[in-house]
Length: 195
Image (cartoon, rainbow, N blue to C red; front, side):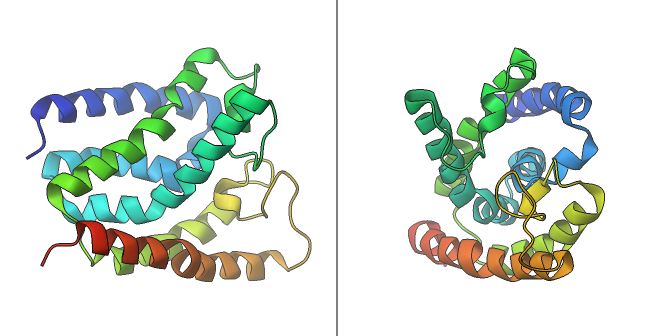
Protein backbone atom coordinates (compact mmCIF):
# COMPACT_ATOMS: atom_id res chain seq x y z
CA UNK A 1 0.00 0.00 0.00
CA UNK A 2 2.98 2.32 0.53
CA UNK A 3 5.08 2.89 -2.62
CA UNK A 4 8.67 1.66 -2.44
CA UNK A 5 9.89 5.10 -3.57
CA UNK A 6 8.43 6.67 -0.40
CA UNK A 7 10.06 4.00 1.77
CA UNK A 8 13.48 4.42 0.18
CA UNK A 9 13.41 8.24 0.12
CA UNK A 10 12.34 8.44 3.76
CA UNK A 11 14.91 5.88 4.90
CA UNK A 12 17.73 7.69 3.10
CA UNK A 13 16.63 11.02 4.60
CA UNK A 14 16.72 9.57 8.11
CA UNK A 15 20.11 7.97 7.42
CA UNK A 16 21.43 11.43 6.45
CA UNK A 17 19.85 13.19 9.41
CA UNK A 18 20.87 10.86 12.25
CA UNK A 19 24.67 11.33 12.14
CA UNK A 20 24.36 15.09 11.69
CA UNK A 21 21.90 15.40 14.59
CA UNK A 22 24.07 13.13 16.74
CA UNK A 23 27.10 15.36 16.12
CA UNK A 24 25.17 18.61 16.65
CA UNK A 25 22.89 17.70 19.58
CA UNK A 26 24.20 14.45 21.07
CA UNK A 27 22.40 11.16 21.68
CA UNK A 28 19.94 12.48 24.30
CA UNK A 29 18.26 14.50 21.55
CA UNK A 30 16.87 11.28 20.09
CA UNK A 31 14.62 10.92 23.13
CA UNK A 32 12.46 13.81 21.97
CA UNK A 33 9.13 12.29 20.95
CA UNK A 34 9.46 13.88 17.52
CA UNK A 35 12.85 12.23 17.01
CA UNK A 36 11.52 8.89 18.23
CA UNK A 37 8.71 9.25 15.69
CA UNK A 38 11.20 10.15 12.98
CA UNK A 39 13.14 6.93 13.65
CA UNK A 40 10.13 4.67 14.23
CA UNK A 41 8.56 5.68 10.96
CA UNK A 42 11.31 3.79 9.12
CA UNK A 43 10.08 0.36 10.32
CA UNK A 44 6.49 1.63 10.19
CA UNK A 45 6.89 2.35 6.47
CA UNK A 46 8.69 -0.88 5.58
CA UNK A 47 6.34 -3.06 7.64
CA UNK A 48 3.30 -0.95 6.74
CA UNK A 49 2.45 -1.16 10.42
CA UNK A 50 -0.80 0.50 11.45
CA UNK A 51 0.19 0.13 15.10
CA UNK A 52 3.52 1.96 14.78
CA UNK A 53 2.04 4.71 12.63
CA UNK A 54 -0.84 5.14 15.05
CA UNK A 55 1.51 5.33 18.04
CA UNK A 56 3.60 7.98 16.35
CA UNK A 57 0.47 9.91 15.44
CA UNK A 58 -0.59 10.01 19.09
CA UNK A 59 2.90 10.94 20.12
CA UNK A 60 3.51 13.93 17.88
CA UNK A 61 0.59 15.27 15.86
CA UNK A 62 -0.70 17.69 18.49
CA UNK A 63 2.80 18.72 19.57
CA UNK A 64 3.94 19.24 15.98
CA UNK A 65 0.94 21.52 15.44
CA UNK A 66 2.29 23.66 18.28
CA UNK A 67 5.74 23.55 16.60
CA UNK A 68 4.15 24.68 13.30
CA UNK A 69 2.42 27.61 14.97
CA UNK A 70 5.55 28.66 16.83
CA UNK A 71 7.77 28.34 13.74
CA UNK A 72 5.51 30.25 11.34
CA UNK A 73 4.62 32.91 13.91
CA UNK A 74 8.33 33.50 14.53
CA UNK A 75 9.01 33.49 10.77
CA UNK A 76 6.29 36.05 10.08
CA UNK A 77 6.26 38.16 13.25
CA UNK A 78 9.80 37.66 14.57
CA UNK A 79 8.53 36.53 17.97
CA UNK A 80 8.41 33.02 19.37
CA UNK A 81 5.23 31.92 21.13
CA UNK A 82 6.53 28.76 22.82
CA UNK A 83 10.23 28.53 22.02
CA UNK A 84 9.75 25.07 20.47
CA UNK A 85 11.24 26.11 17.16
CA UNK A 86 13.78 28.64 18.48
CA UNK A 87 16.72 26.50 17.33
CA UNK A 88 15.54 26.93 13.73
CA UNK A 89 16.55 30.61 13.98
CA UNK A 90 19.82 30.06 15.87
CA UNK A 91 22.75 31.14 13.62
CA UNK A 92 25.14 29.08 15.80
CA UNK A 93 23.51 25.91 14.41
CA UNK A 94 24.73 24.99 10.94
CA UNK A 95 22.22 25.83 8.20
CA UNK A 96 22.28 22.23 6.92
CA UNK A 97 21.28 20.90 10.36
CA UNK A 98 18.48 23.44 10.60
CA UNK A 99 17.39 22.47 7.08
CA UNK A 100 17.14 18.83 8.14
CA UNK A 101 14.88 19.95 10.98
CA UNK A 102 12.17 20.65 8.43
CA UNK A 103 11.26 17.02 9.05
CA UNK A 104 8.95 18.58 11.65
CA UNK A 105 6.84 19.79 8.74
CA UNK A 106 7.03 16.65 6.58
CA UNK A 107 6.67 13.97 9.27
CA UNK A 108 3.12 14.83 10.44
CA UNK A 109 1.94 14.95 6.82
CA UNK A 110 3.49 11.53 6.17
CA UNK A 111 1.83 10.13 9.29
CA UNK A 112 -1.58 11.50 8.29
CA UNK A 113 -1.17 10.08 4.78
CA UNK A 114 -0.24 6.67 6.20
CA UNK A 115 -3.23 6.77 8.55
CA UNK A 116 -5.39 7.47 5.53
CA UNK A 117 -3.84 4.51 3.67
CA UNK A 118 -3.60 2.02 6.55
CA UNK A 119 -6.14 3.18 9.13
CA UNK A 120 -5.79 3.85 12.84
CA UNK A 121 -5.00 1.05 15.30
CA UNK A 122 -6.82 1.62 18.61
CA UNK A 123 -4.16 -0.40 20.48
CA UNK A 124 -1.78 2.52 19.93
CA UNK A 125 -3.19 4.38 22.92
CA UNK A 126 -2.02 1.79 25.46
CA UNK A 127 1.31 1.21 23.72
CA UNK A 128 2.10 4.91 23.45
CA UNK A 129 1.37 5.40 27.14
CA UNK A 130 3.91 2.66 27.86
CA UNK A 131 6.46 4.43 25.66
CA UNK A 132 5.87 7.72 27.51
CA UNK A 133 6.23 6.03 30.89
CA UNK A 134 9.67 4.82 29.80
CA UNK A 135 10.85 7.82 27.78
CA UNK A 136 9.95 10.65 30.18
CA UNK A 137 12.00 9.44 33.19
CA UNK A 138 14.80 8.41 30.83
CA UNK A 139 14.77 11.91 29.34
CA UNK A 140 15.22 13.32 32.83
CA UNK A 141 18.12 11.03 33.70
CA UNK A 142 20.13 11.40 30.47
CA UNK A 143 19.49 15.03 29.55
CA UNK A 144 20.14 18.26 31.42
CA UNK A 145 18.09 21.42 32.06
CA UNK A 146 19.67 23.19 29.08
CA UNK A 147 18.53 20.42 26.68
CA UNK A 148 15.25 19.90 28.58
CA UNK A 149 14.27 16.91 26.45
CA UNK A 150 10.48 16.43 26.43
CA UNK A 151 10.19 19.33 28.94
CA UNK A 152 11.12 17.12 31.88
CA UNK A 153 12.73 20.11 33.62
CA UNK A 154 9.82 22.47 32.99
CA UNK A 155 8.13 24.33 30.18
CA UNK A 156 10.22 26.99 28.55
CA UNK A 157 13.90 27.82 28.86
CA UNK A 158 14.13 27.95 32.66
CA UNK A 159 13.71 24.88 34.88
CA UNK A 160 10.53 24.89 36.91
CA UNK A 161 10.90 25.27 40.69
CA UNK A 162 7.30 24.85 41.83
CA UNK A 163 7.46 21.07 42.25
CA UNK A 164 10.26 18.71 43.20
CA UNK A 165 11.77 17.41 39.94
CA UNK A 166 10.64 13.76 40.34
CA UNK A 167 7.08 14.90 41.07
CA UNK A 168 7.12 17.14 37.99
CA UNK A 169 8.21 14.19 35.81
CA UNK A 170 5.45 12.07 37.37
CA UNK A 171 2.92 14.82 36.53
CA UNK A 172 4.18 14.77 32.93
CA UNK A 173 3.72 10.99 32.87
CA UNK A 174 0.07 11.56 33.77
CA UNK A 175 -0.43 14.64 31.59
CA UNK A 176 0.82 13.18 28.32
CA UNK A 177 -1.77 10.36 28.25
CA UNK A 178 -4.65 12.51 29.50
CA UNK A 179 -4.01 15.86 27.81
CA UNK A 180 -2.29 14.80 24.58
CA UNK A 181 -2.85 11.12 23.79
CA UNK A 182 -6.49 10.60 24.82
CA UNK A 183 -8.01 13.47 22.80
CA UNK A 184 -5.85 12.56 19.80
CA UNK A 185 -6.78 8.87 20.18
CA UNK A 186 -10.49 9.69 20.16
CA UNK A 187 -10.12 12.00 17.15
CA UNK A 188 -7.94 9.64 15.09
CA UNK A 189 -10.08 6.62 15.92
CA UNK A 190 -13.13 8.53 14.74
CA UNK A 191 -11.52 9.72 11.50
CA UNK A 192 -9.24 6.80 10.55
CA UNK A 193 -10.45 3.90 12.73
CA UNK A 194 -11.26 0.61 11.10
CA UNK A 195 -13.32 -2.26 12.41
